[in-house]
Image (tube, rainbow, N blue to C red; front, top):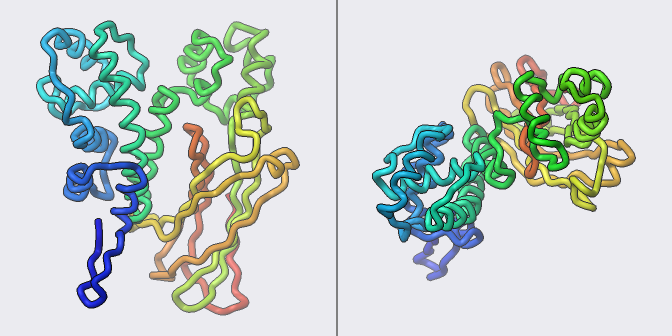
Length: 336
């Protein structure tokens, strides 16, 4: 985490060291991440990796918790490495139970659940920061999604409307049973939504929430700069209605990155704030950056924009540079 220069006798923090310092991560946890962190981790492996963090080493397996812990284990979404016989298995079970909003009766188990959830969010954010610095788009997307699931206590398979707390649970259950996606709800008028859910009066409220759910359209313009560098100009157009009750009063945070479709590598990433005034005025925001061109015959890119707060809020644009003539006057445009 620290780099030493023997000539100058100076110490300099590495990206990993800065991440550990920023998120208060213990060095045994960083060592564990170094040995297990891979660009193709799936959700079950990510949860297993988090559960073995040194921050949870002081937790204990209690005899009086065993029955209820076993019941929580039965409600898991992802496979639990270690099961109920190890502390890291217990941490994994409690993380999933917290997201699922399962009722926990045992006081010590409830206390451990809150502790695991609070520290889990911080550790996942640290892992996400490591994934961004390492250029791992697939695992970065999964980590960001997992962090948002812990924040909202819903799974990504649930309807995104569960992030609005003014909708009754039985209405949300019906939406999920009918498999009504956000795209489908956007196309339907409020009255039709109400009739389909057998609650006409609720149609207008649901339609308002759908309109408030963050959505963006991305248009990309690619310009060759040199034989190995491309300049990307993004036009980001908001496609939702702003409401201070659901959004902040100034801006909505997003992550933007560029990945390729064959190597699962991230060539550019940045934190982006979508300003309230641009959403209210329905005016686009511009963003420009450069990325390397590795193979102009076969290279294709995905520009991805993911909300830092909202589960399911994502924009994407596909760009192919196959056959591009590397001249200053060449311009290739793709629209989402």
